[in-house]
Length: 266
Ligand SMILES: *Cc1c(COP(=O)(O)O)cnc(C)c1O
Image (cartoon, rainbow, N blue to C red; front, side):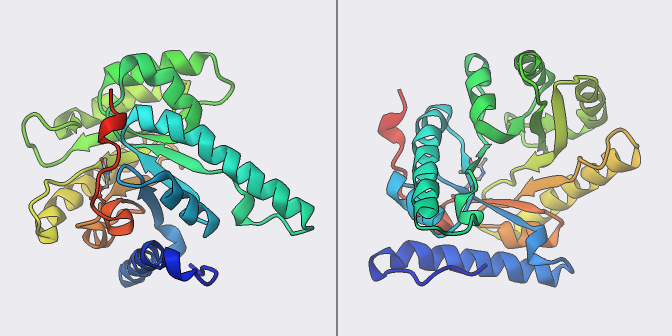
């Protein structure tokens, strides 16, 4: 992905971002795919608003949030920035480009019931649907919309107790139920591997999720729009891509480790 020459003061962030982009591209090519076939979602839970803005100005459009509060605060703010960039671009007679596309927000954290409507309004894709209860809540919300809500089913592929996600044995049943909810569109699966510090430990978990993804396809329960496999974070996104991920969620490798959001959380 080409980026216009970064200014010195932005160097750190844009250098890290460029490196992640390059590593995503290389991992995609190594696994026999084009780099355009793997989507990088920049996870902003560790980011300052102006860091997000820098990536927006560099042309990045897919951002992930795991906190509802922060998503609802940031989405309108950044949308306004983008429309400002768009009208400035138009005033200068520039051509519409990717820089003027709206931001696509990905909700990747646990969904609170009472926030489902607001989250659905601002999100392009909700990765964290992990039970029929949550799906039903969103189906209710979807009733009042003209487009279905696009979701991923979050899987617990490692079998860890107490971990978020649908247990593997329940997968086909849950997919069948969600398929009957006409205000939802199930676009694929999402999973998280245990964080051990060694990316190779994630490999079997990602491999398992890939198999489950294939199972759903071979059961013929879904259509062509079931095509997203969201797995891999800063520590293991290359392994995830090798195991078949076509969407990776990367936060700290781009924005650094500091969590700026703690005090925003009521
Ligand atoms: C925080 C988070 C990420 C990104 O984590 P990093 O290790 O900072 O890349 C990805 N997915 C989910 C669900 C997260 O909560």
